[in-house]
Length: 125
Image 1 (cartoon, rainbow, N blue to C red):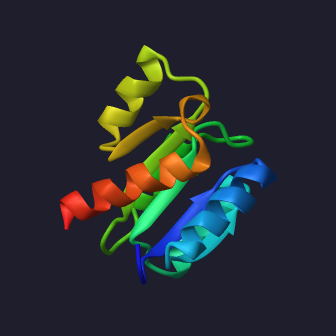
Image 2 (tube, one colour):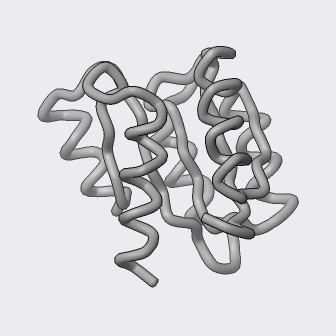
């Protein structure tokens, strides 16, 4: 994950702190946001290699943020959606938005999430 530019968007301060530290420790350059609007502003301001987005954000969803980011010009990041509520509708929406990974938070500790993302990034080159 060395030198990857990562955007982490989650309204849970504990997730931001924990995943942010793990990503930084893995060598990533991390930007964080706690709302859809703040995340979209960051997408508009600079490119990212990876975006880890909470599914349930205040007022909008992480999938809505994916769709908005994909409408912006330039290269799009590797998208990861984190959630505690995987259901058929959420998975279908993620597939429609071409989300690269969909991870249930409750099934993995933060270090496992980072490991899963790193392995997937390596596979993609």
